[in-house]
Amino acid sequence: MAEIPRPEREEQEAYVLDEQDQQELETFKLQLEPVQQQITALEAQLERLFPRDISDHFHLGMVGRGGRASAKLNKKKLGAMDRSFEVTKKLEPLYRERTRLTALITDVTSGRRKQQREKQARLEQWRQEAEARVRLAVVGDYVLDSAFGLVKVVRKNRKSLTIETSSGYREPRPFELIKDVASKPAPAIQAMTGPRRGGE
Image 1 (tube, rainbow, N blue to C red):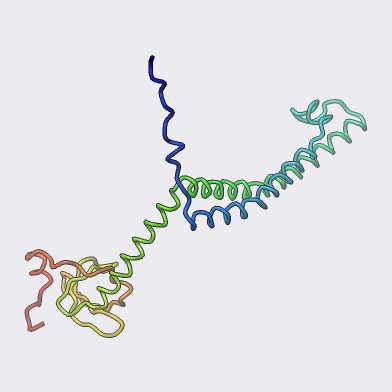
Image 2: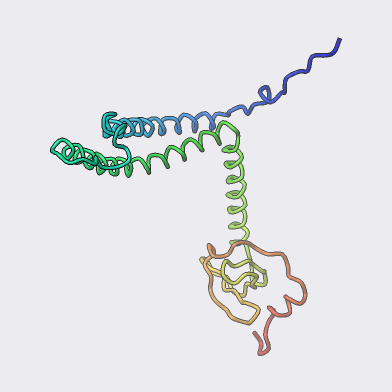
């Protein structure tokens, strides 16, 4: 007797929310609820602006025949169209917010949100470690400046490092503008950024 194929294990291996996931999921759902309520109310308002006796029979434009009844109907329809534009303008940002929150909820339940948090945590840890390395830099070290790239430290004080570029330009740079301490450059680069003639 042939073996009955077993179902895929995708459901069994579904992502399990951790405590922070659950907190974020609850927060996003609470934020989404009033947004959806506003959308529902405004969409209902749009429906009321176009009664069936008007929209079903005269949806292509104005009523063609003259007379007071037609004029009244045309005026009513124009007023409804103007109000519908106002309602639509209110709906647009609400639709965007609903899309944003729905995407966040999907990210949480799929595990992508946790991956983003972990990536951000790693970047923050690297930033803090790099900041500590920069503050421990000494004269002669090479650092990565946010504007000048690889430069050499020629002076240090409590709040900044004075750096020297390959062209010999020097400038005090606050610690926060230095990205990290660099490894020792190749001899060619070191020659270009080393002391210049004249005793410097």
